[in-house]
Image: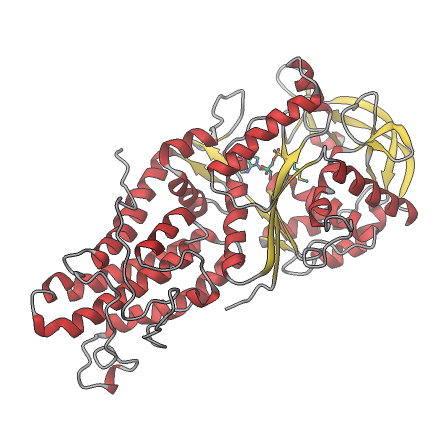
Length: 541
Ligand code: MSP
């Protein structure tokens, strides 16, 4: 199994001028699953960071419209994102707001370093500027809409021709180093995103303006030594990753976090993270990110979400309605890095009903039910009845399909591990659920509910139950990053410690069968706990 020694995962920090939506929810769930995976695979001091992007002209404008100070507006808006994280059972270690004093210090440190290294100069900039997008566009990227208004092709937001004095960053000097970094296969995933970044660099990079006149953007960090300019909101926002990587008190970057950082980003902000950000870092003699993971977007009923269409889905509403794990399972099963996915409530319920309740829930109930398992233990495994090698015991009761199940269980952790490490959560879930299906078919073949009626079959019944329990235990460990709350309950039901360790990741069936004293890997006498409620309740459609 690939071992990740260090792990520092970040999500983008969210603009506070809009309310949380399912795009934000997806990003934090994806990061949470990756982080929980690194925790159970034994990463050293893993850290997961989320936060909010609180500066900029848009936030200032919205706060004014609502008759609030920008500070007060940010506190309230940030609280909504924190509420979403709690409701989605996100286990983030850090939450950063760009208005924090520690963050301002980081911005100044990076700026000063770039200035010392000769990467910042005074210049002017003119172009099509969108207040909504806080971005300049080239003439090729704007068009005139039906109402005769100039708008950005990409976002449809109005643009105005603007000329400004500002500070610029010598991005054009960084092409070669960026190419070198982005050419590594792991630096940017998926491959199509890496190819896009390489083509942007190969087309040539222009210097980037990194400040705005404070008369236009008063809500932000003033540039060091000149309060007439405000640090460009993206320069400010990207620095959040350094702020969270700093050690408290010493103000130094923690070597266990930097450069081990993995940035999760939506496809619309890839350029900022995979061109500008590594360029700033390398120009300041800091290591670029270990990896940038770009994901596709969610549509609703196959249409892009937008306020004007009124199809923005509120995360809290769906989490309340379907339960946190059904929602997490749906997003991780259907979300992809390459292609957009579609959000429908029917799909949430159908996955919950068929995969979690019918497949996994059913298997759990079958092997823990009092009728087939009256002693409520992990019964002993009789190796002569199910030997490692089918031909090695004349008493062997297992057939070729049973050996296929064993084979699947033995390979599952490695396969899932590879997929999780590549952020292919949907494919990993499919693999795990296929193993559960094989487990259910195993029970169907050997019918413990019939064996229990035949006392002479007790050793074989025990072996069948032990094998099936081990299958549930293993799948439950591997599904923990996806649906942590339910899998914690399943572990409790199985009489295991809630904390998962790396030894839990191994299938033990063809290794050691009896493990006295270990509550992580059950042995022959491990007692099951009772369970008062149904773990996977089907949802009526
Ligand atoms: N503030 C910047 C990020 C700065 S990071 C240094 C920002 N914020 S955002 O709130 O607009 O977007 C945050 C994340 O949500 C982005 O990764 C974006 O791609 C993602 N999503 C926004 N809409 C989305 C969907 N419809 N589907 C999936 N993710 C989407 O950009």
